[in-house]
Length: 150
Image (cartoon, rainbow, N blue to C red; front, side, top):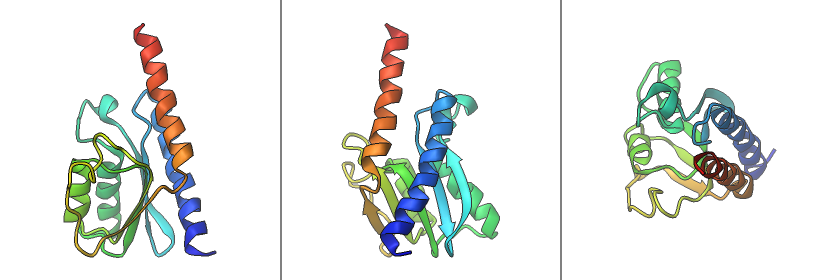
């Protein structure tokens, strides 16, 4: 399996997590963290359930992966996340020294690139993996929310 095929495989796992969030009426963002081609953490947004603005998928995944590895640095890991990380999550990924970030849909309003958030200098980034699927899920969620409010 080449790198693109691996990225698609693991992004599909992150999309599964995003669907779990959707079912819980959370903004459907999912993440998985991979080390040596094995998923060591799975997470999705839990901000509503936990009543915690920091309970983003990436934050939950970082905590889980760090616990699994027994250390705070994720230098040899890749996070697959369905939406471009926000400023808070990008900052946490920088502090964790994540090796690679792979995201699906871009976030032109609140994404770390729009806000010029710096990542760790050694972190590699790939964006746009299964972006259409990721964006459709987020769009469907917000359409549903607007219908509920009207």
